[in-house]
Amino acid sequence: MIDPRAIVDPSAVIGDNVSIGPWSIVGPDVEIGDGCELASHVVLKGPTTLGRNNKIFQFATVGEATPDLKYQGEPTRLVVGDNNVFREGVTVHRGTVQGNWETRIGNDNLFMPYVHIAHDCVVGNHVILSNNASIAGHVHVGDWAILAGYALSHQFVHIGAHCFIATGAFCYHDVPAFVTASGNPAEPRTINREGLKRRGFTSEETALANKAYKLLYRRGLQFDEALKAIAELGDNRVTSLFLSSIENSSRGIIR
Image (cartoon, rainbow, N blue to C red; front, side, top):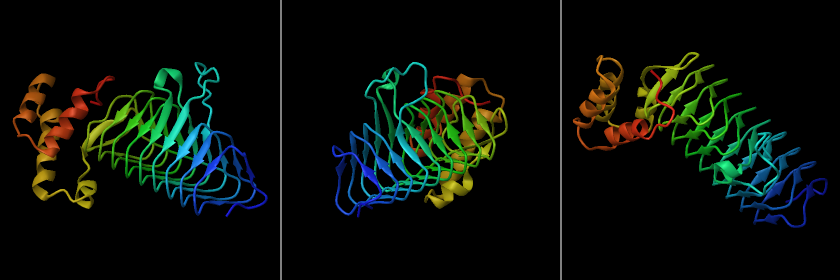
């Protein structure tokens, strides 16, 4: 149902069973998938594509042009998957030419009030950004990562899968998979045991993640020595994900 007080551009493509509340604005070049819900006072601008069953709460602005000074009005994109929740006051910006033209968000994510997702970010699946967490341009957030309230991330940082970034932490460098980080600048503290337990990792896998973490951060090994020792733990989903998040780092990892 589209409330008669909403403003919807005639060119917008609206799927089946979509709800758009009063005083919401849907601009041109917007595609809204089946089952999406827009509350009142939502601003949705394009080019933006929403998948199915996304919920956007009041005063959120999704698909706005970035204030990045490199942006010159090009028709860059925001692409959003399915089953995401954007709570009150969330802001999500489209990409830039320098960032492959798009910002991309996966599936089943929760963005709590006043979260900011900047231009050219890539957010995976099952991610939670708590109140007022913000990620700057070109940041990548891996699957199942959690950023607690007021956590911040510098441009181009990669936050690995299954990470937990504590309240008020500022990530200047990449965070390897499974790591819990806190502080300003963010420093590694331990592995995200509770998160791994909730996601079905076995006790043996959790112990393996902890061993890999200690080899990297607690044994006093040189960086290359630590990576070699971690690789010797065997080829499995824990060491593979942990190593790839380190080896693919472009900004260097937190220490």
